[in-house]
Length: 269
Image 1 (tube, helix red, strand yellow):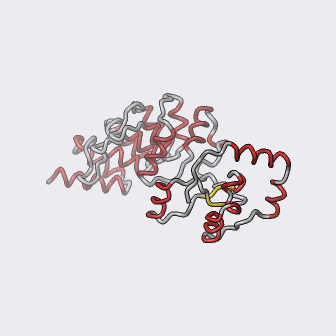
Image 2: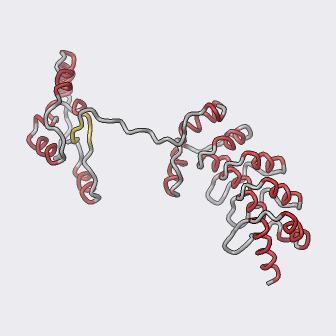
Image 3: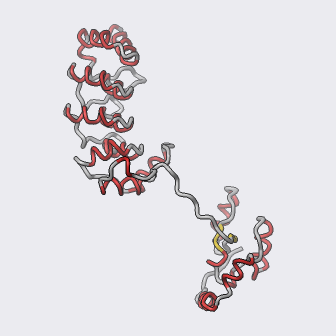
């Protein structure tokens, strides 16, 4: 009971940044320095201070002998938390205090991985000087999607890490790529029956492509079912005048002829 009471006080003093009272607790109960703070807070005092982005408290707890590689039962080390919190100063302090950058969490990620996952470029660039072992783009995208993380363009971020681009010079890695606007959208008749059935079940819209990507015989203005599908979905059946003028050049006519000759796909309505 006494030990639990001490932990509760220790947690409260960390959260309230009461330095002197925190020191008193650690002096009286040094055994708490590397233990979980509570059954529902699987963090050591050091991790809690890092989580609060309080560098002064981090230094004090380190001075009391906290293990810079012990994060608690959750397996997330203080360095990983500093990377997740985007605090380069604390990252640097922990490494100077002996934090191991090679440790991986139960999820298989290193501190550098957590910097990348959260789109925190500054700690990622700092750690990249020590270790260049990173995962494939797809691994970061999948984990971020599964855990509802904010969007990060990992291709751009990792490319600039490898180039060692300064933080001030990197492009916006949080901006989602804009979808290409179709100039003359038509429903793609090459959709398979399997995709068609799945789309109906999921109430999804039909796939769209540029009209001129299709050979002439598959364009909706040349197919009864194509005309119907365009009208049902509120799309124009015929080409716009600008698109017609663009497609009447001899070269475009030649390309359409070749496409028709090579067309061997089965279309589905």
